Image (cartoon, rainbow, N blue to C red):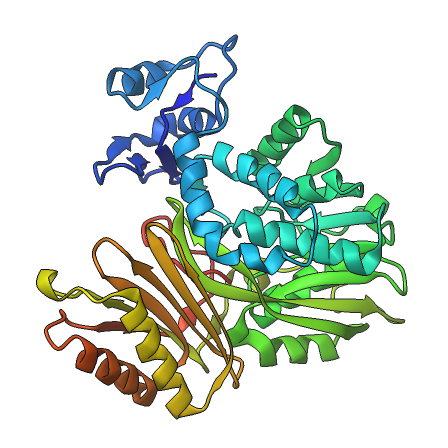
Length: 438
């Protein structure tokens, strides 16, 4: 296969902005002109040996960034995904045979050496994708007719492997083409279609499925649009699995009150994600199981949905605090010190519900669920002693408490910087690259 070399990946932007080729191994970047964006996308996904590449391939090959005869699966990206998923494998312990499903999803994510944020996409980790599919199967049973509205997470592949009859619709032609290719290579059957939620719903998709799964951006208009289409795709009694940003729990309740559905089950903070460049993202989403009742959705199948319902929205009531702590070289803390500090702090605050710790060769992870539905999620670099954490919800008082606790442990650490802001859930502009899942 002709593709970008191991560890290299593409960040594709719309014209007139340049795209880039980056690497997991170093910080250097190579700019790619907008005219070559389509070929860069093909190279990121891999081009069969019998197809003739364009001029960009030879340019990148001479720079050591692309080559022939490579395996479709990039071992460097695969290793990074294994590392990112280590702290979440324990979620699957109740599902025998989950490893095979995780491997399938990891192969798919590894082959997509591309970040394309035109549609506000951020993928969930293979472990989280497998967990979603296994939880759905456990509740609904085998051989269900499943519709997926938007599949940046490749759930269609995992659900097909589990024996379901899967249809996936997505506005992203590049993504749908990629799902078709991977499904073919894996020997899976997936009906993958380019379909926008905005136009009236095709008749063949109406009340044709047992269950729908979707992960819209978490503000009122987008929830209402995607869930209206999901409701129309199942008969009365059909199930809908959807994902909710913790900031939007109250907004979600308001949307549900206006739809012919009832909440059957709520799985808090089920899914974890990664940013562009296969970087850990400490955002978590809830999964909610809904059942359709009698009545019509807000947007009927014959109605077009206005575009602004999909691309605009803001949540500012409860905010995340993202923090980096960088110790000086001769006062590097041990993870056990950081863990003990967090344990003591949460014990004094009296907010801890459950905690999980995973110590890997390079990174250690600490996750604590809090009584108010929030969390503390920390990743620790074993080599440098640096660590980053996400505190939700974040307030000035809680920030000061955490800063003080870590300041006492490492008095000479560099500035502890909180980046706390309201979460914008609109589609990101190509040049800003907002790193927030919604």
